[in-house]
Length: 603
Image 1 (tube, rainbow, N blue to C red):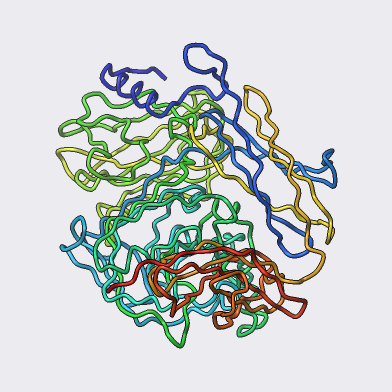
Image 2 (cartoon, one colour; image 1 turned 180 degrees about the horizontal axis):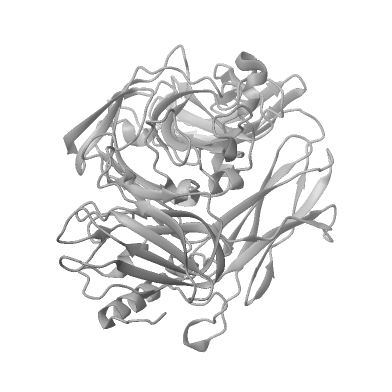
């Protein structure tokens, strides 16, 4: 088909390409310099029972397409390796909820309210205790209060459940950025911690049918609790680092639920975060059911930036080569990663009287599985036809969509969706046939998901991990991370890890949190090694300790978890030593000694 090139549009497309760095995956560096090799570092490892381990590492791909794997074995000859995996695509997909008008599709087990003003940036939402107890994970991380959560894909609590369908229903949150405003109102955590939480289903095709298996993970590398104690609006901003040491597997609860607890099943952190196809939360974890949190929590202006897997996203090989003449907005806004928002949508020229056509060329043949087109809230489009071709000569209709004029739960839910496709394509044409307004027809983001694309990564540091299974108890395993790009292959340093020979628990003392004059919160990492375990912290003015916290249940999972405890009755301006202690039927383990110094007391 012929191409018509709008000079202003061409300039904007070129500018966007430069901003995104959408160069060829095999191209060299600036000014004809050779492309840099990936930077590679082998990271830490942790046990998964007595026959498996999780290994970590980091890669800086310098914005070039790169793949990685781990080598491992009983010597530096290794002998085994994991599958070769692409470094994930760029953080280029955006979800933004202002909460200026209602709950925006979010749910809660607490009492939920919305306010049109009074927030940090307009309206806000409030979630008030008391709450029911979620005890599905008592033999893992413990009891939960589900403060707020959003269904991300096809699942929901019923037919009327708002579903955001992030990433076509399968969002990749590895390394995602999270930001929001938060405020506590007479909030008393009472030992709980407010954390990020995700739920992923490894057999999503079953939906809610019997046999479903879901993995729950808490991001324990960052806690929101500190931002909720002063009664003021505080901006919270953090990354979900894809490093297993920053996460705690939620586990399940066979003690109370018996065989039905098997529905909550371990799935590796890398896989679970690459497929957050159920929901994500901010919630209160490690809740004491005899002394639960009290008060309420306010939230405003939530933003999530996650991996963009859309086949028409510029750095994933998509190129817009034809668009309507005389449009009021630049067509680059159709694939900028934003669903909608000021300056993020497209509208036609005045009073269109014929179909508005957009043609994308892909840099290789792909298989299209899902098409998702978002609405322009101000100038809503209506009927849309999507056609695919492998040669730019013969086109076949693959989807006929009708966009909703608006959505009950806000513009994040105003989209048309087609799933279950299997269309081969090198070219994709979107034909907007009508609109709800005569003056302009509009569109929000166009997203296409499937397989076969080669997606460029960010020019930044990536954390990667994988599980190694089938190991021998007590064996010392050598491992290293290996990454390759067009510039060559780089081998990370050799590291070793000894797989546990017994089910004796494992303990590592962590840093102190919220150090005050007379109290402190301490943390650590433990592994119950599959047996019911208990933990406490020893503390005192010297490494002989002399005091200890009350003993608490540590669960019975085979993966590491973070634990917290409060120490009260301390003296101001005094040095203390502390360590984590974990016990089960096979023995007692002691974390390393750490120290802290309390703050000055008030006169």
